[in-house]
Image 1 (cartoon, rainbow, N blue to C red):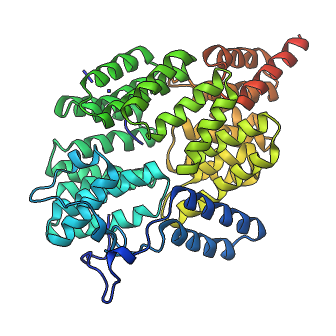
Image 2 (cartoon, rainbow, N blue to C red):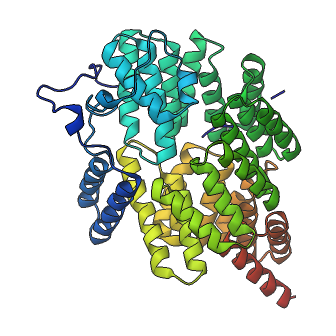
Image 3 (tube, rainbow, N blue to C red):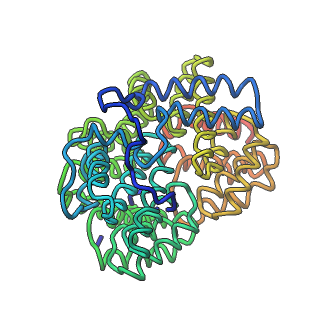
Length: 489
């Protein structure tokens, strides 16, 4: 049996060699710190509030430069590689490298491709490593570097499955799931046992809302390449269908089979997220503690721990932890969560700053080729422009009809005052058996606005019973709505 890791490319085909007259490595500017990236986002957010349209687009380009300290080629301009740790020799195992320290892997691969520029496997591994790093440090500009590395691999060995699988991962990271599926299928035609392609295929089908096909793909992947990456996807597919018991069992098996700190941190975090979603906060916190014992810098575990702390009543601890997370990786999810915690304690100025940073990040992500409509819809519906939320939600729904896009469209319609129109989408978001307290809360509020009081009481009660601390603001709103419904009886 088996357990989701989530949540590929083209390019110049030029070798990563230093430009003529490059300064010595010691004089090369270092990449910006995490604090520097967040400061760049803050400056952009302030500029964005003063102007829109072309001005905003040009600011996004400047922000991308600030976020990367001017890096313009694969892994930078080639000079980063001169500071790398000793390079990889001979055959390069992408899976081994990427499951270790990503920064070390990237530096090693950069050095290696400078020394062995015709190693197509190393170029593919470098591209995939850049994709993975972008997803952890919140820097979408890495995707362009990944694209170039993967294109170089394909130029050296057309049709090689490693680069095609990398393209699938890149397309998925950019939320172009139709392209991810196409790349994964092409990779599997060449190598039916490619773990990366098998996993990307499951991811793409899930994110396209093709859940029955995703379940079959997960079963095929489990039969061909059982292991942590496949097990976690298998578990998520089961969770989406409401089978939490199987998802939990599979994740525990994955944790038992985890071979190194990176896998332990990843699977323990997945277990923590599963248990937190079921309102089992003590159990979730134990899993996050195990993840952080394996890797004390693992951001998804820190974010999960903060959310569990908030749900369990430790709002001050949650704020402290989330401040650490967004200082290193200013992604929309933790930014909104931190903003809501600030708002909950009455600090509206700090809350507004976090919501502005979400806008800045989404502008940067768009400049990096990422589809951010779902992120925009979710953030803007509660903390921004409701018209923009509805536009983004409709665009996301048109591309991929998942439970998440159905929920986002339902909530955006409701926030725009169109609750009757929202109701079918809210029902669709909860139709697969997937149990999410935020979805149930949204459905209950929409039912209440549509005059369906009995259904609203059932949905809101179910949300609070499942996960009573699902959101500091949402849970409070759900309780207030229930009180109103009871008073109106």
